[in-house]
Image (cartoon, rainbow, N blue to C red; front, side, top):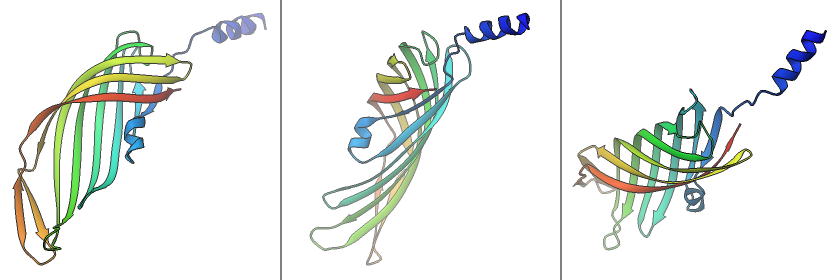
Length: 178
């Protein structure tokens, strides 16, 4: 009985580090985009995760539906999900569906384009109990199908070339560890 009590007290004093992180970007939520990510700590300083972004937006006469999925690998300088600096790498796959109505002729064009990309970045992770905030930057490189084919409701088609590109992005996330 004494050994069992000692084992119980020792187990209760072990500092168990959180292994899971769920996060979202409040800025994307504010503009109507459904987004989220789940990460799992696989070692003391490395986590892996997957996320999604789904956004339906209409600007003037253009409707756009975006579906994007990504895998992410993070290195945490102070330990997984601990307050401090992090570095990240990611790979993504995206699909854009477009619909636009010409203001002059009322012709409606629709089309879809898919692409993939990769990126890297980093930032700082603040942690309070189970809640956290992250602020960082990323550089993304992407490549889409070379041509966006638009089809009109009257049967005519139109093509737009889409070049590959590289760009910078900001990252602002809030999340919870458990």
